Amino acid sequence: MKTYFKTVRDLPREEYFGPGQLTCAGCGPSIAVRWILKAAGKNAIVVNATGCIEVTTTQYPYTAWGVPYIHVAFENSAAVASGIEAGLRIMNKKGLVNENPKVIVIAGDGGTYDIGLQSLSGMLERGHKVLYILYDNEAYMNTGIQRSGGTPHFAWTTTSPVGEVQKGKQQLKKDIFSIVIAHKVPYAATASIAYPIDLANKVKTALDYTDEGPTFLHVIAPCPPGWKYEEKLTVELARLAVETGYFPLMEWDHGKLRLNPPSDRLIDKKNRRPLIEFLKPQGRFSHMTEANIKEMEKEIDAYWDYIVRLMNAFK
Ligand SMILES: Cc1ncc(C[n+]2csc(CCOP(=O)(O)OP(=O)(O)O)c2C)c(N)n1
View: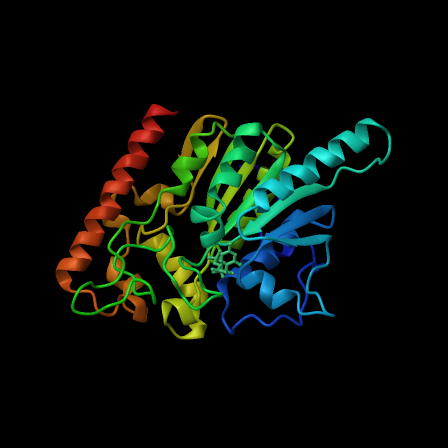
């Protein structure tokens, strides 16, 4: 990662994600988008899949977007972005325009892990010069909290209920990061809204590397109604997700994998905060037994072992 910003004061004062939105109080994804657009600057085109961010920012006749913006269907944001990028490339080549805006996809976990996965994979494989940003609130929130491939094990959602037969989601969170890097992209990273400088530097780095090919950013973005916690805890939970080891901050940079602070010192389990600190404030996990929590801790440890193996394999 390159360092463009050292403190929040280094970020542009301009706001490209304006007020007048209808997001919930404490919306994690809207915090993510605000930082993303600040870091990207005005020379960007946003392609936004259907989801909370789209419905809350585009109420006709208003818009919260200070950059060119297109809302597309749930399943094809990466395909539309590919078309915009290819169209601009050819128009520049023919001398019809002389502009090179960066094309950025912004999509939720439902639109990325599940329904848009084929168009994302196609875009990555064809090598389009696009930054794809996944804001991960870990369920289909806009339609009333249905489980997605990004929903974690044990989490309550309306389609992974808690009752006699099952206790929340039965499957593990899909490893989207590994799926993306398997496409041999130049750059992919994870980020959290609790670490805005890290997030902003990753946005800028990823945008720089789109000159070489597609890049990807996976941002954890808590959701008060979906995760069932008090709105004021959004940033705190985004921090605890990292500090407990639940969501490691890392980057895949030209074939090398590295952990970023503070995750780099969390390889040693002793440095991680107890997982319960992340789980406890969230109603979606309130049914979990001690045995469930132990099981989840083991799953997190297993993921860290896998990351360390990957880091050693790709140094
Ligand atoms: C093909 C298709 N299926 C279902 C829907 C209904 N739908 C609209 S938004 C949405 C949820 C989006 O979830 P996610 O991508 O996680 O974003 P979030 O709402 O959480 O921001 C669904 C299911 C749709 N618009 N199109």
